[in-house]
Amino acid sequence: MELSVFVLVFSFVILLAMSVPIAFSIGIATTLTMLFTITSGPAITTVAQRMATGIDSFALLAIPFFILSGQLMGRGGIARRLIDFAKVVVGMFPGGLAYVNVLACMFFGAISGSAVAATSAIGGFMIPIMNKEGYDKNFNAAVTVTGSTTGLLIPPSNVLIVYSLASGGVSIAALFIAGYLPGILMGLGLMIVCAIMAIIRNYPVGDRQSLFIGLKRLLDAIPSLLLIVIVIGGIIAGIFTATEASAVAVLYSLLLSAVVYREVKWSELPNILLKTVETTAIVMLLIGTSSAMSWILSYENIPQNISAALIALTDSKIIIFLIINIILLAVGTFMDMTPAVLIFTPIFLPVVMELGMHPLHFGIMMIMNLCIGLCTPPVGSVLFVGCGIANTSIAHITKSLLPFFIVMIVSLLLVTYIPWLSMVLPGVFGY
Image 1 (tube, rainbow, N blue to C red):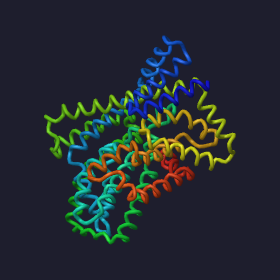
Image 2: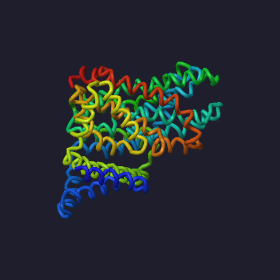
Image 3: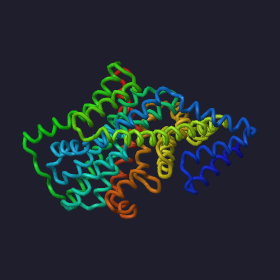
Image 4: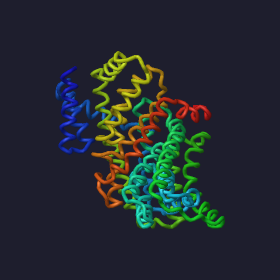
């Protein structure tokens, strides 16, 4: 077993260091490990079978639909309307544009299900405006980058669907509902940082909107925000499953973007569909190869051995949960969320369940943890997008990110050690 584990870890790390795409790194490392464990013919066949089995899931049909819905929303003028609405709600405070940025990122991230899309859409509008108003551009980028990750906790969220698959069937609907309070908690924490920085740096106070303009912008934003209500409301009411809800989200997004707002032309649909297929193919390849790696980990009893080692190390739940969070924070700095969820869920879920943590609670904790990784170098995809939009570098933005990181980690620890934050809403709705 020691040799196979060494081959798996060593080959995977070397491939990542050589900048081999993560999906190929996982697949190649898994195949090499199986060659040491099983004879060559069955090894390659087993990898292929496990990859096919890994994506053979009805629940995963929701992913391409939510991706398509996010693409339509991203091009349908939703960002501008959400920003205008956020200005009405929080724009009149000192440093109001920073609050607007966070709130708009939360809204758009939840609607699109993509932190990268939220960073691009909201950052493209807000960062130039904040620069013009005298805000520091590195601060502006940091606000956008961190605010965008909150949408991955507030449904609909593709990564929660991936966790449901990796955990062996935790209810997607329950995960969707459980993400609301932690997502809002993180968003409020980021706003507190914005408030403190606004006072320290004397950022300008935003304009107070008239009642008429406020109502108009609310009415403009309601159709966009209704997507969340329709999707989650339909799931809770039992009208449709999470997978069926994703198809409803596509239909609604198409009608809103192409018919109501008329900002997506019918001639643009082929390009939108092509981008959706490209993104879906990447996600499905990651899921397939990660499923094969998860199988070899289970075959070698690695989760059981790690579980036994952690429990032998200490009998304190507090310490073990802290160790798991530290490991996941480190993993998030070099691995994207989807493969991290697929690989580390089978490893750590048995540990936390033995200590009494509910799989639902662990899922929210894990996703919240890995959201921080999207903002950290060297592979933070959201960080790179934010730096590109703000025309700054990772070295310059890092100092501005530190107070936001502190708040995000505090929020993570609160969610980790206070199960109520994740479990109360699913309990209210009978999950």
